[in-house]
Each structure stands twice: as structure tokens, then as C-alpha cells.
Image 1 (tube, helix red, strand yellow):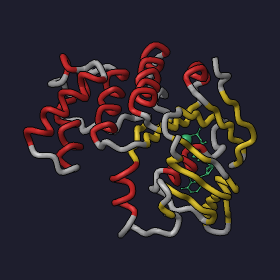
Image 2 (tube, protein in one colour):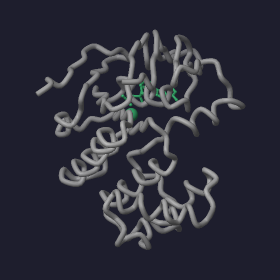
Image 3 (cartoon, protein in one colour):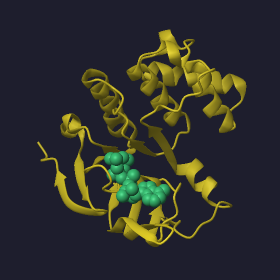
Image 4 (tube, helix red, strand yellow):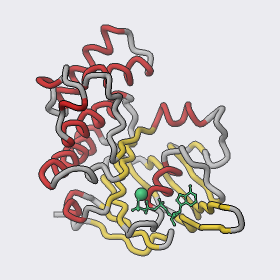
Length: 231
Ligand SMILES: Nc1ncnc2c1ncn2[C@@H]1O[C@H](COP(=O)(O)OP(=O)(O)OP(=O)(O)O)[C@@H](O)[C@H]1O
Ligand SMILES: [Mg+2]
């Protein structure tokens, strides 16, 4: 399987006045296409910080970061958007949907930003909403959808970008058990059927069985790795 993201000694130190906090410390990992990787660890262990660096929305303090063999750790805001647009998409705990836009319009917007014409975008948006099981609710506003349904719209929007890597920060955090599992099963299906590389930061250890690999974080370090036994 192709390597999507690779890091060597990736480190992030935040400075606040005189205080320095090393949120991520010397992390070396490789994430491949077709795998669903869980990033687990207590609050403050550095999961969001690591995910943000992998997603090229936070600049590392030191170490190397490769996204599809592009060295990105030293790129600036002139060059990063192109990398993000081509390879990476995010799903957040809070869904981040536009409240005044319907499910369909939220997905359409992502496709328009990608440069699709109105007709192409419309067809694709409907296909994506079908894929996440929401076609019949496509004209609902976010406030009229359940948490699980909102998160599935966010998954459809992430897919709209067509990027091969999906980074999700606590995607099941606002969901009950059944809806959380459904969203995770959807991400797993995308990894199997479309060879996506999916990385999920979570506290939710009820979904551990859906990960191919789990990286455990503590104090900014990966302290343990579990791989699912091949059956
Ligand atoms: N912008 C920031 N400035 C200063 N310190 C920060 C900043 N963001 C995070 N930190 C600190 O870095 C450490 C790691 O935070 P991070 O948000 O990555 O943890 P987390 O594992 O995602 O936690 P949670 O499970 O609560 O979301 C914490 O000590 C946090 O206080
Ligand atoms: Mg976090």
C-alpha cells in the first residue's frame, strides 16, 4: 500500500509568554492508503496538535513531514493550500456545517470550491449524499438533522474534495453510541472501497474494533501501537 503521510521526529512546542509546552514530541509514523488508524490518549496528550500538523493546518516546530512524498514541514501559506486541497480533508467534532445551507448545499459548496460546474456538482452531491444514506434528507437544514446525520453530511463534504486522506478529530464525540458507530463504519467502508487513508483522534474506546491500527499517545509521544490481528 502507498504511503500517504510520513513523519520523522515531528515536534510541536507552543510558547505562551515564558511558558513552553511541547504538545507533540518526536513522533515518527507512517500512514498508508487503505488503513483506518485510531489516535487514542488522554485529554491534553497531543492528539489534536498531531492531527493538525498531519493535516498541514499547523506548522511543526521541528522534524519532517511528508504528504505523498512532498516535504511540507517548511512550506508557507503560499504553498500549503495546494497540498491541503489535493490530498487532505478534515472532519470535526462540531460538524462545521454552514447553518443556513441545506445538506445538499453544504456539499455543493465544497464541490464548487473544487471547480466543478453547477451540473457536475449537483450530480456528484446527490451521489455523495446517497453514499452516506441521506439522499431523502438532502434539502434539510443542519438544525433539522440529528447529530449523526449532520456528521454524515460532513463526511459527504469531506468526500466531495476527492482527497485520499481523511483526518477526523473526535468525529463521534457529539454522537450517541449507535450514530457514532455508523459514522465510523462509513469511514471504514471508504477506506476499504476507495483505499482512503483515515486517521481518527478519539476518546471513544467503544469504536476500537473498527481501527486497523491504534496509536496510543501520552505526553506528546506515541507510547504504544496495536495492530488488528489479520483474520
Ligand atoms: N494553541 C495552543 N497554545 C498553547 N498550548 C496549547 C495550544 N493548543 C494545545 N496546547 C497544549 O498542548 C497540549 C496538547 O493539546 P491537544 O489539544 O493537542 O491535546 P488533545 O490530546 O487533543 O486533548 P483533548 O483530548 O482534550 O482534545 C495540551 O497541554 C494543551 O494545553
Ligand atoms: Mg483534541
